[in-house]
Amino acid sequence: MGRLQRKKDPKKKKAKADQAQLAAASSGAAGGADVVRKPAAIQRRPQQPPRSVSVKKSDNFFEKSMQFLREVKIELKKVTWPSRKQAMGSTVVVIVLVMIISAFLGLVDVILNALIRVVLQ
Image (tube, rainbow, N blue to C red; front, side):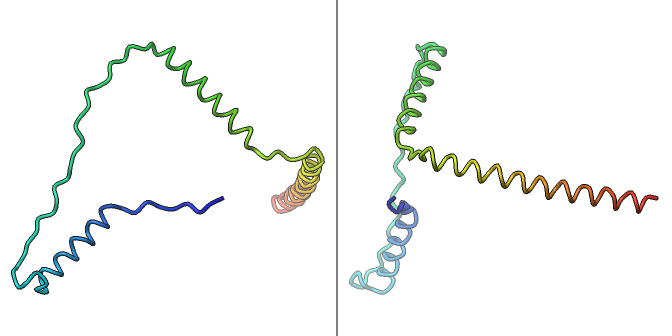
């Protein structure tokens, strides 16, 4: 799987560019004239009118459910399933470990139960 790349924060990039411009202006790189630049205005997206909901909620729910199930089917096709032999081996290992841990905890319970009876008498 490829390495995921983070998107760079445009605010940091803009801040670095503003600092570079201020440093150039203060060092006299602009021909000796003091140049003061204002930061660019933030552009706002035009507001879109709210959408009118003419579809029934039950139809919308049904469509979303069907789309979800289609996507689940596609994702399940991508899964690498273990062979029958691997699944059986893993199941046996889990069952054996559960038996060992339950026997250990049962033994600890019996010992602590006897110890508490001795202390209370």
